[in-house]
Image (cartoon, rainbow, N blue to C red):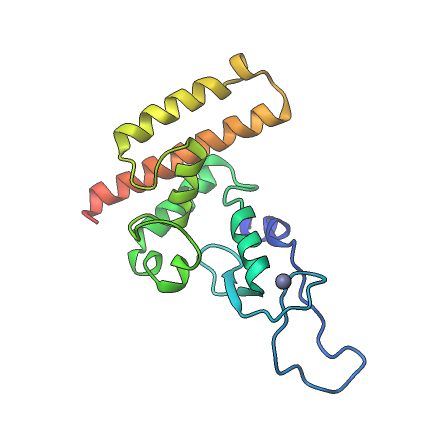
Length: 178
Ligand SMILES: [Zn+2]
């Protein structure tokens, strides 16, 4: 399963072991970022559409949010499928915890927001703008232009994945009248 294959991508924080060597129960949850001794009172989803959370201190919650690469380890097809299923499940995409710490006007999922950022588009960009940005980014990052280095290839894949996510979500919205 892709979910298991991606497990390590979410794994920079490690669960701290509580009460190691002692019997006192931890009454306050610590920040889940390894080595951090702060109180962890900021929940963050471990993965999209999953109920499991990390609990971080304010600083590490912000860090986690900023560094969260939604597309890490995903093929464009997987990214598009995931975004489409999220767009179809509007009750979930509008759940309050999904909005936590994220930008957006509540009508676009986190995947779409990340895809917009990849293409350099504003959160409220329409499909005409998005399509133009995608074409430009795809051209600029194409192997013929940008070469075949790892960074260029990664950028090209991210641009394609972003487009797949946004066009799939738009198709779902258009079909479902969301
Ligand atoms: Zn922390």
